[in-house]
Length: 295
Image (cartoon, rainbow, N blue to C red; front, side):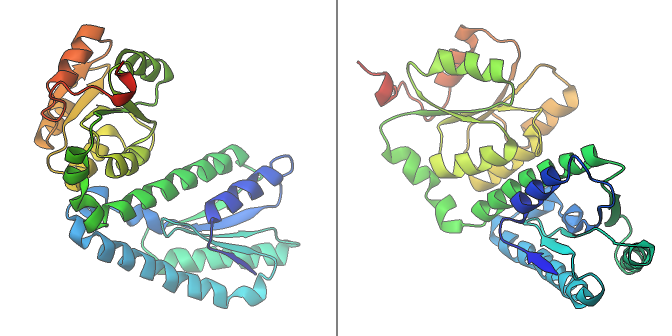
């Protein structure tokens, strides 16, 4: 049995792509332990985040050990341990008996683990679903990196120091829509350094690394949505100046964003004057222009 831990997401993506043209016969048992990760609970206190992640990893290691013990019956299988602690046993049975044995293992795992955590995947019947799963695993890997960054107390403590020490102002745009991102960047990059993040996961990592002066955060994002991302950023830096952006003005979203510390709300589409006025309201901008934008 091949056991893959390092870059498991990329290895799995490559394997799915290899048998995309002929997926018949490929099956997998997916132990989705990552479904037990509660984002709000996890990021609630960065000081306890590392311990919470360790507990999830410990459970994953225990299940992985039990699967590895069954390698005798599935020597040609590949066992993945993903960054979010999900496990996957990928196998192509050579006959009905080996298929039945593999399915029996799935039923045993389903009976012993929490309901809803174990899936049986037939790639021949749903190769598109397999490709989407591979993409989700890559995004989940990025999310775990963002959690690890949130657990770095020293890095978080230096955010206000780094922001105060630099001469140039940074505006972070968290937006997956290319048109909106290009439009916003085109307005602001003459006067400020602009940092563009396409997902909530990227936004958390970019915020912690760059300590921006203001964040424009779209509510509707792939992976972590804007409200989840806002919570994480505010946990990383309680003084973060975040403006929520959305094409709609759902009252519930506005209330939640306000409760989580958003400074204001910007509705799409917005004008150049409106955007610039909001940037200038950031307590960290104070009329400072980007070094790159100065004559």
